[in-house]
Image 1 (cartoon, one colour):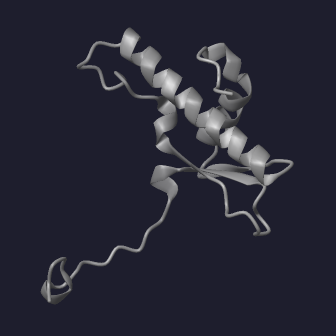
Image 2: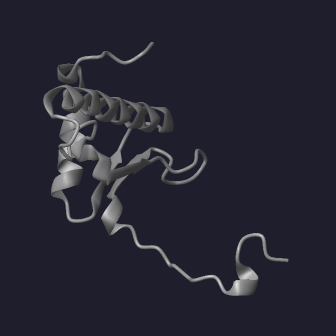
Length: 113
């Protein structure tokens, strides 16, 4: 069954995403099962989609929020099924995620032989 198309139908997802935005790096949501975590992730992503649509109606095309959501700053993931953390929804601020970045040398570049 598809999610509703109204913003007000997602108060649970909005509460979770707002909490993640307020946190320094993000949050972990403990769900009852892996499928419950996946369902909550889908509802959060549906809320972001609706928020982008509504912002496209509110803001002119040149505005930075046109077709964007404040929740776009978040990455949502559910660990693989069968792991200890399979029932978690992990929501991280994208700018809080740390990556190791290494420049490629000429010989390591794409297409190099």
